[in-house]
Length: 385
Ligand SMILES: Cc1ncc(COP(=O)(O)O)c(C=O)c1O
Image (tube, rainbow, N blue to C red; front, side, top):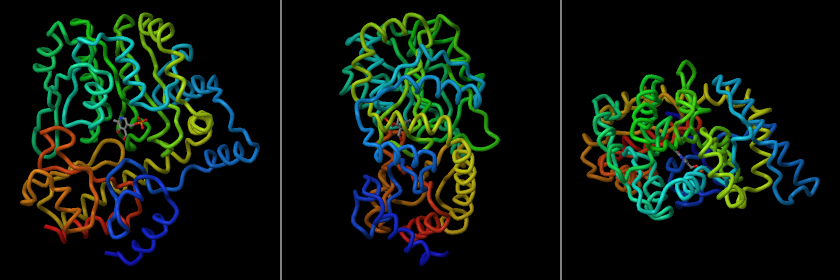
């Protein structure tokens, strides 16, 4: 493994990047925890941001360009027709989720999530929006496949207190995308039991070549109360500039968001976020294509490296994005292998149990990096076992 080369790259990234990924841990720790990519951002985004700074264009945000830019991208990419009038701007995806929950549900309501899932889901539902949480865990089917439990989902939707479902598609951390058929089943159940669907689709631009992503709203009947929350932040690696989008599906949600939340939603959006989002959707599609290929190549490389150097680690190549959900239960590292890997291997992964009890014995590894750094990660991992 070419770890010497990796060392130089790591030193460069640590010197260049003052973001959380690179500054959270001491210099001897290789960070693979938070979902930021190590790749340089797209030139059109760089140029748009640089030009704004050069022109002292750092005033209050002016978001009207974002909805049509998103609509063009969604139409060209997924044949998803978005009405720009139904797009609301929000600083980031989780802020959007909280705003929708606060606007469209009541404090006594309960919200369904499917753990293991992105840890801020539980945090935002319970501690920020103040709603109750009803976890309906994904069911492990072996070989790294986690399936939705439709029977349990229906039971949960049937509770009168359950009024919303927070869907994660593509799913973080499993990296799976739901099929059109599964999404239709969700939409039918939600319609039947009058449950609002909040689809977090932030990872959708990073679906791997050859895989098909179906936007949830394209399978929802017009009466279903639903939103999709999307952003250029993950796909184009600009989470530090703030401008995510909530696409409201039905008339009721549009009017709820317009009357009670629109202004509040837009306060924290920043002008650089608006500029980056428009440049991403309109001008940085070739960069996205290249990045999807790079990520898919690393997803396969990771499988090869693990089978050679750490065959006891379970890993299924994801359908989308750059997060590997590693099953370390056969490695004897206990409930939270990330803690042991940090201590023994100086490798910082995202702790599995943070995603729910279903994540015990697991850890999430971010492989949006160079093949050399990825090899270094596996080398640190295997040396810790
Ligand atoms: C599923 C999911 N939702 C939301 C976020 C966070 O997005 P934002 O920073 O726009 O809130 C992430 C970040 O990794 C994520 O994986």
